[in-house]
Length: 136
Image (cartoon, rainbow, N blue to C red; front, top):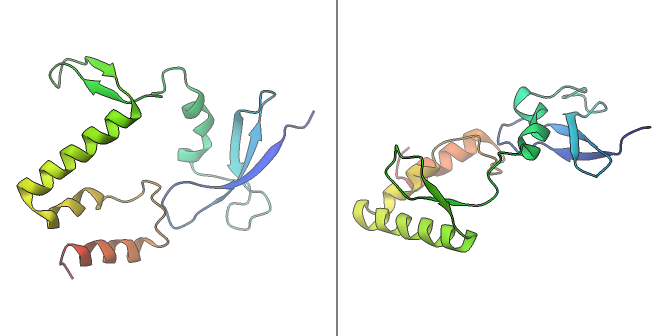
């Protein structure tokens, strides 16, 4: 029996934006992903980061709720919190950092690439971030 195939695009932020074929299992969950066969760039092949997505998504130890550290950084002691609390606490810490270091420094956290943030082109992304930071 043929498995259902859905067509998608890679969520990563590299410039290739690879076309994907995603096979579903009997429960409709992702079973396997590969580069789209009919796409001249992927030609049925995909990078190792995406090839094992089904394992990552369906892994029993995958985090599905935000966690707050209870002890010190080395304690490994965490407690689950709501998404609303996690977002509120993150926003609060970003505002504190902005107040302490100034608004121009807040963009530094976004200077990393390849996090699936949807930048059309890497060079444009870097140039726009540098412009925001006052760099040329």
